[in-house]
Length: 319
Length: 319
Image (cartoon, rainbow over all chains, first blue to last red; front, side, top):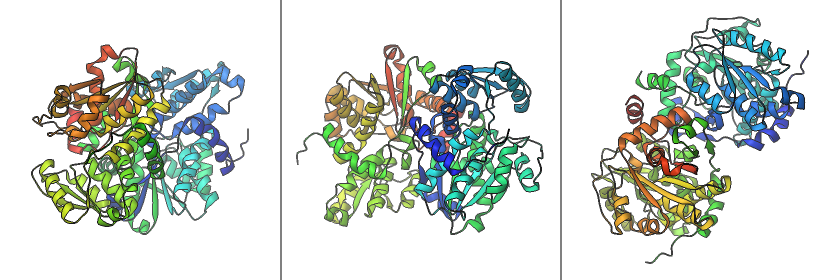
């Protein structure tokens, strides 16, 4: 099966479905945060969406584009976090059954949230990749649609946040985006580069889970050790389709240590009074790391989500 | 000086100014929170506004309605928190000078935020009332406008959130609102009762700062001991104009202990993944206290703001 690569046209087409159920999120400016970063910084508040994360935009667009047969047979996916909540939310919105595999030891709060949204949650496998293989076989068996976290319909939907950034701040110079599977950064690149190719797209991942960065840099598909505390950045096996797009759209890829991510969680709590999950704090950690070359630029940090556990929040604010 | 009492007409008139600078906030539903409260609960996310609190709606409306002379002479107010940020934000938006008195020992984060918004912040007096008396004399001396936290133009602006609630959930049965000076609950009552007089307006204050409740109940202006940790509920001296309106619009007034407010902060963090200040958690604490009589009702909890300090956040999640 060959895919044509997503374009801004696909993102524009997704808007009508996304805005049927969701509202644009704010892009806010915090004076005290500017001082810390040493340049003009805006936060894109994807944590203000329902489910508290950008991924819900993709889920809505995917569900809206299903065939009658796909709707009837239901959606199947694997997730340790926000992707599963996005599919559960979209499925409930469109009256579709969702079955979500989560690995053993997954965050009970997220399981409860997915079940609360009406999804069937099955616990299987030692990690995300095991859960994913297992549920994709079940999906095939039941003729249901298996949804990859990098499905292009998800990327089209997610891109609507990048359009909102460009509409609110057309003069943006750089956008810093956290990378897990890569749907967010690809969607941002597709939109921003189509409007102004000089906008710098900066990806960020944890140094404790660098598979996507190493693959992007080398041009090969490289697995890497995955030990980050940041669920949203916890990719061990890179995704091919997003890697292909990232080579085209990403200008720079920064690795930040988990310790700096934790510290950024605390800084964002203090200066924006928003709850952020670790992945959503990684763009600030990256901005602080490359502070010198951001000076005099207008920089957007994508606050991708707020779904941090109480335990991790407690660690971040007391460390 | 006599005031005619605000009506829904004033709130509708404020919309055009408020929406010039602010967007409506979401009203979200969290399945796991419904289970905890035992009925259908919606959260009105006023914490998603710039400055992280509902009060900015009032500040914008007030600044929009100033005369040229008032704009020229500047705004003067006293605040320990969100009111000051609202006036600073509105003044910056309209290019007006703001001078804000804060009592000694005020939260340095909030002082930095007000200064970041361009306000002049002066530290004076042992508490809010001392700071207020002092700054109102300075305002008179400089022929500037002193802004009371219960100025009716603020109430008109704040009421726009109540209109949003009614538009999104016309079938709402009860709205629970935290009370500091009372502008939020009065604005909510004015709007809700005009649309459907059967909507129950439930006020909530801390048992450790019951002046507004005792005054409402007795029909007299009663001061009371003020020892709450919830800055947004910390009223020692009741406000006359809001008391007058509350007697007309408020159906019930619940006191909750600070300990229950802290616990509600943690519950909201876990189940909505939003950072909340103590005042914004008080409606959940109240809902849990009167759980039996809310059963089968559609209840809105007003999440008035997110400006909690790291110290208080840490206390709430570890207690």
